[in-house]
Length: 205
Ligand code: C5P
Image (cartoon, rainbow, N blue to C red; front, side):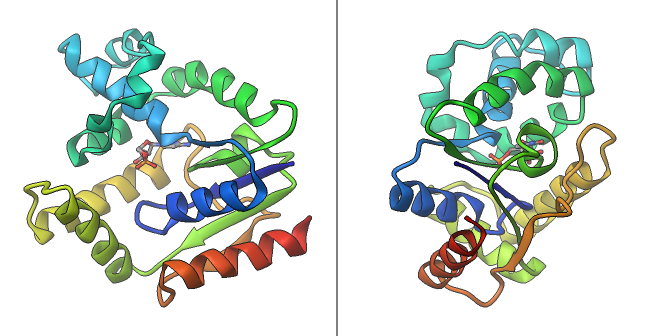
């Protein structure tokens, strides 16, 4: 059983993915982590995020890096979205994601292109959406909890930039798969969003 969850930053993907992973006892991969690890490695080698060659060199990261809490920092997310536009970076990270998605016993993956590119054959596809204010509130709360020093204005700019890069890039842009079910989480708290996602997934299996 493969459950694919896609959506923009702040739409509630990770919380829902973790909840469903626990509910169905399935392994979970947040595919953004791989892009974040490349971004982190790029910083170590002092590469330029806009250079595909530099970003490709950074794809050779130590898998242990995926455990680093630092990967969650806002500036790493921003850098990740810049390196994620490079087609050869996406191609390089594809295989790892494909293998995880198609492991025996199934899994839950969240990201931007799971339902469209990594696992078009997923048994259940959710596409999450939320209005800009709801996403801004969520991301701002997350950064405040981590004492990330960004102002709310800077968070808003970051979200807009990331949305633009994710939706306008040529290589597997953020899109709702034709067979994905849309869930708008704008007016749902975490528990309501989890339960709504569960009802949809159960209806699809
Ligand atoms: O989901 P997360 O914020 O961790 O992802 C970081 C960045 O990685 C995203 O802003 C997006 O640009 C990129 N990404 C992607 N495709 C995925 C997952 C993440 O392009 N499947």
